[in-house]
Amino acid sequence: MLPMLVLSLCMKLFVSVEADKIMGEYLIVDGYNVINSWKEYAQLRRESYEHCREKLIGSIAEYVAFKGMHGIVVFDAMEVSGPAAVEILHGIEVVYSGEDETADSWIERRAYDLGKQKAKVFVVTSDYAEQINVMGAGAYRISSREFHEDFVKAKKEIAARLKIPNRALNRNELGGRVQGEVLAYLEKLRRL
Image 1: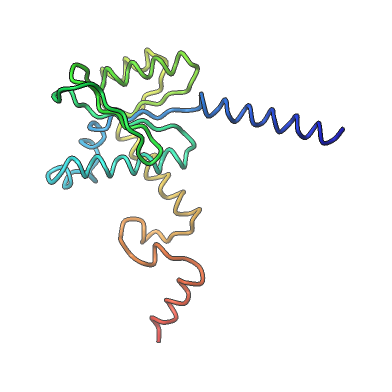
Image 2: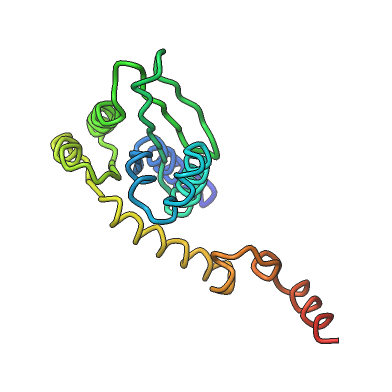
């Protein structure tokens, strides 16, 4: 009798978890809006938007993995001919809008569709008109500045859970990438 009860509870939990995966929470990011808003991208923007996109995609992937959300980053490709392109990178959906569609309109449509499916949708943009439209679709709006603050907070939480020293968050040091016995051994060698 007990094994059937445990099996029944496990199945209910599995169905609940699977339903959360399907519905869950979605973070839709207006890629160029964030790139043009965050100070971290100022210098990199002058050099290469491609590197900015790659860095943002990696950052969003890390954030949504930590928060347990589905991630979608949308880039405006209106000036480029051809249909919209979608690819999965680092577990998130990366969308380049089609030639006759702005990233804003793609985001608004997707927020509306996900809202109809009862998903909880968060849209990151500082574009006021887009914020109004996505809120009308039932999504939550997060400005690029607010998202930056939450992103930095999440990075600190990740570092705390992994016990990474604060000094290693923004610098490329070996001490930020090794832990435990290896770190202690290297410190012992350093002091010889």
